[in-house]
Length: 267
Image 1: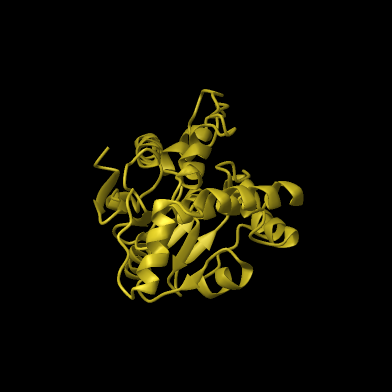
Image 2: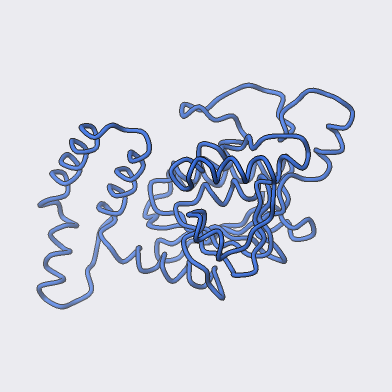
């Protein structure tokens, strides 16, 4: 797996890097497997407080490996990710979709650092992150229409709530390439950075210094925004807050602020 994805964890921050640099981190079968395995590992990682996902080399992720498109020319019917099994996760994803959705399922914030290109499946992988830091000159695209396809790695589910309906339609139907500033304006990126990975790691360390119980509760609540009805959200806000008030880490947050010192949170 290390020839596709590497993980280094320090101070509760996981630095996850796509390392298939000779192929601009394109998605082949081994990359899909590595992304899923890495995400599943991090879901259960004790002491984890934040994740940064980035790509080494010239690009974040160029999208599906060209070998898959060449195979499609034969007319063989299979998914664009080369999957032949309909197996689904409890959340409803097949394996290709899970390679993107698993980052939303990790209980702590995931920050994507996007440079070079993020096309097609690579763009959908970026959407799986909670936040997306991009360079101004990054090239992004919902590129599947170029190959006569639709986004099928959770792209439609992940764009929901980020962009207007008509914007999603235009990007899906044209496959046009857009840059970092426009991505921010549309809601598909969080901020433009000269060095997305450095800024993402800095923010991850800042998050790691907060009450980890509140950070995880916040991710759970925000995950409800797109689908849950108002009464459910209000009830969950109260439930999460009740669980936090008076807990050891919440008391430590208050004490540290009152004593003007750095907090010492327990995992």
